[in-house]
Length: 44
Image 1 (spheres, one colour):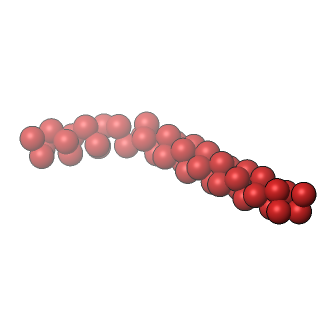
Image 2 (image 1 turned 135 degrees about the vertical axis):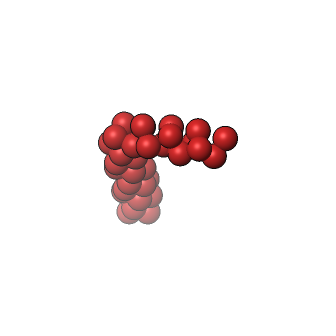
């Protein structure tokens, strides 16, 4: 089972890398948006 998982990870590495980058950027964007909304709420 462990060998099968290693094979899947190795095969999908090229596919997973861009997905991880995109998801990380998306999470950062959501976090920044939330901070901005929070700051605007404090000012208003």
